[in-house]
Length: 213
Image 1 (tube, rainbow, N blue to C red):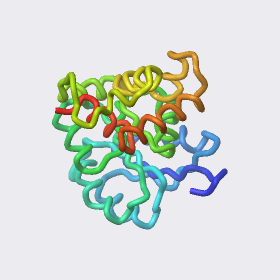
Image 2: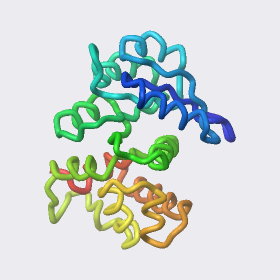
Image 3: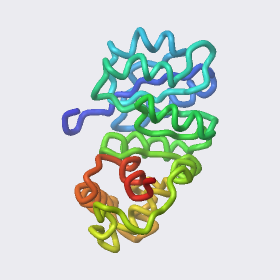
Image 4: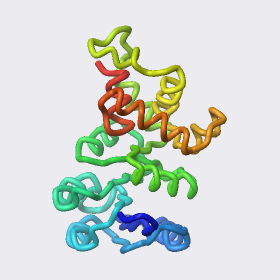
């Protein structure tokens, strides 16, 4: 995506009320462009490769094919596209199946409009946004350990460690900045340095490495 260009979004959502609400959000938000809204996964499989959006906001539970199966079908054709799962459910099976399928983020439908827009921007900045409840479920599958052979923990500064803890709780960049009394830009700098030290690309990889089994 070139500097200053709008973030192009495709939406896959079977419930008309939610689809209309998200359509309104994405068409009214500056810097965001809604490419197309799909009613089901089958339609999306046909249209998404042509859309080539920056972000796909994907419902999971739909009649017929699920959103997870849809991601599996199209992700190879859309290597530059970020997939944000958007669902009512935060059960372990769906969370991990979505991540295994290649999803880059996972939001619950209880998220506010601001949280949805923040998640879209975080995806485009290399992040992996998750609702707090989802992030806690992910972390629950990894037990903390005292020592690691790569000494990743020892390489982090106190501030970077604090940022990582808040990332692990599922907070978005702006929420971390507010919690720590920093600017969003400073938070991003800490995150980029932390990712470089840990040799990871996003939040999920950082949390997995730090809390890894």
